[in-house]
Structure formats: structure tokens, C-alpha cells
Image (cartoon, rainbow, N blue to C red):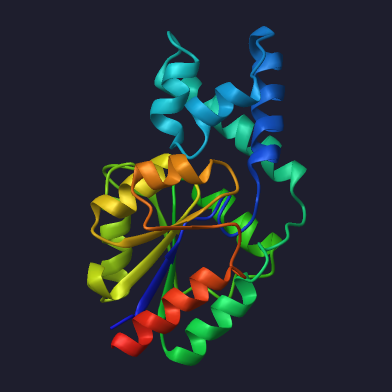
Length: 221
């Protein structure tokens, strides 16, 4: 039975990586004149939680300094994203889930302020029953804990769910939680998403392969 859909946020509900890259570039330039290439961002930054990431980016900084830098970066991101567009087909999928009685949940490595901002900027703040923020848990993605927590919120088993992810840490987390994971190819190549554990890769939520999968899962239930 398919009873639950779990969604990453950045790069999955809306394509925000370009804005995050801009924010990181501005922060690094302000801090010590460093540059950040697209390739470095894709390989080292995209999809990761801020805790370990900022400790690596600013080696030698205290935890308090790293938190202040992370707060500055996220404030820059929010200033760059007053309005955001949902990925094509997302509203159709959310309507389908609602009509079918499926639970839906956001599972994100983003801070809660960002999650609230982004859902509001897309006009989706009222659409999600639960928002799981990895920073508020013991372990972020790529650990499966955020997705296991999302399943608990929805009273669903892994076999009853689909997860949607665009990043390699996110794919790894959902796959490790035992959830069939749909990779969204906004930030990574289909090949890398499949290698990380995606069972299907789509460009957006209008993909015929996604709707065929949904029909198959619902019919099987």
C-alpha cells in the first residue's frame, strides 16, 4: 500500500541550488576572499547539513563562529529568494496525494527558518502536515534518521512510502531508511543519483515514468 510521500526541499520541491551557490560565494568572499566553483559546490556542499559543512569550510573557527557564518549565509539565501516556483508537476502530485489520502512530509537538511521561508515563498506553507528538520535531530542526512522520523510522523512503514530527493546525501538517507527513492535530476546527473540508490530518476514531477510508478504502487495496494 502506498500511504506516504516524503520530499526533500531544496532542489526537489523547487530548484534553489543556484541561489545557494550565490549565497555561499558572497559569504566566502566577505570572509576571506575565497571563491567557490560550481564543481566544488556540487561535490562538497549541495545537500549537506550546515553543522559539519561549516566546520570543514571554516577550519579553526569555533562552533559559535561557524553558527554565525551559517546564519549569515542562510540570511543571504532568504534575501535572494523572496518568491520561488514549485517544480513542474508538484502541485498536481500534492493534489493527487490529498485526493488519495496519502500523508506528505518534508524531510530537509535546511534550517527551520529556511524551510518555513521556502514553503511560504512557494505558497505551500499549508500543504504539508509535517516538516522534519535534520538539524533538530541527532544525525542529519546521509544518516537515515530524518527519513525514519518522517515515517514515524506519518505512521507509515518504509514499504508504504516514496521519497523524492535531488542530492546524493539525501538519496543515501532515504535509501538507507528502506524507502523507494525517486531522484530528481536538478542538481546531479541521473547516473550519480542511480549510483547513490535512486530507484527511478525524473526531471520533474510531470515525468510519465513517475505517474506510471504511482499507478503501479496504488494498484498493487
